[in-house]
Length: 406
Image (cartoon, rainbow, N blue to C red; front, side, top):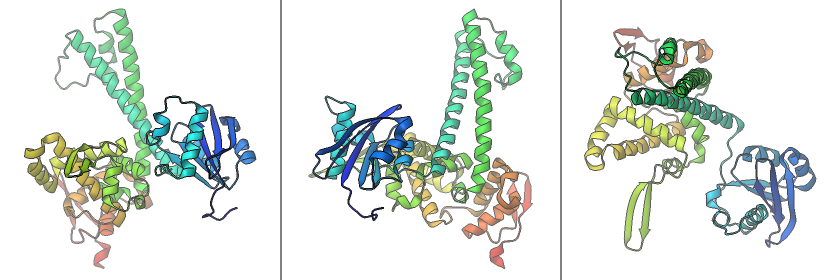
């Protein structure tokens, strides 16, 4: 194998589709010296072994099969660069776009060093976590959409449940739904929506149970749980989106990655800022906005921030601004593995205790009880050493003594 810092001799551009890819290579002078090759995806590995070498720098766009192709290429070539399609303007804006032209343009841009920074390829465990979270989100959305369609049926037919607070979507209410007056087609659609509702609810519970097993095993999750509005699901969503926090040398870069930074126009004597860019991971941005909505209702510091900003910005923009500030806190907690400087010891302890029961005490590592887990996490953060009891509703739970006092 060549040394890691060796210079490649060929630059291979791949235009990938679901069933095949097209490969074209150029030399350092951007002259075509390889291909075009039309390669079926099932035969890709044998083609790589036969045609590519450790002197080939491969570039491809992020698409459906990217992770599979990346994993196959990595052991056999000099490097694999993955780019975000909208960033490759010469391909996206081309008047005549074919597979061969796309692959050739990628190769030539790579040889000239004109490609934008590569997309980070997460390790397999992060990819799997992202997939589970995405599947849960889709099932939750299916559940909500089925409910909305059933609500719409009631409104169209001026049907109003008589018992206030009654859960009309409970399984035992299926007979009530099927007895509602309506056309044959409406009754068919009601049955289909009830089936979708039951299926989606079952899948959400199943996926959530799996995530509850994963959350306590990740040592970074409790660092995020101390932030108001962040529980097991939100913490895993953040960690799946961010990956290795060392990828972001500063909190500002993490904010930009989430698309929560403001647009800036700075030219000549003109300087202005606008709305957030939204040019980043939507799941991370949504998770932080959801946490911000909770924080402004439950945490004294963020309540004060909301009251300070809301008269000038309005509610929606203020929540987004607080989401951005919370993401800065996330960066510090993950990068420094420390306590939140706005943390209230009792509130953090309650969040750890609630987290333990939310994910299930049986899922906690090393057979810890909820009280032991709470104490160990407080000790990890270096706070609450003198806290002996935890108020929880009308009860007070005695915590184990802090190991930091010994």
